[in-house]
Image (cartoon, rainbow, N blue to C red; front, side, top):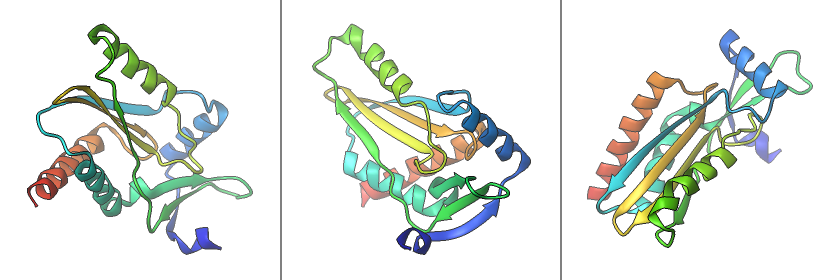
Length: 168
């Protein structure tokens, strides 16, 4: 009952989403529909403000609060929750040798490249501290909710939220 109380909207899928869902169900380990970007952040970085910015983004874009259900239904549906929290994975890896930093981050992203479209957040964010004032930001989405163009829009919004919250 509690899950139903958190549902804001239910939509039918577009034909493109239906195709992606079909392939995701057929091969749940595939990263074919995983969009990922990475950026280096240098200087002062405040993780709690970044997490607050991510949650503001999730609050304002319902697609980031979406899952897809298909079991026991005639047609699959996109379910948008009223509330969902973003989780930002953080690791301080400054103890690793410089030559191992990229390999560590690549291994992490390979391990976390899949999504369960029925229950996971379809967006994953990770911050790796690589030096005292240097961080690597890795952001992944399932293509069923975000395309390359939308990713740029979301990134700009995320950065504007962070700047506004950081300044107070």
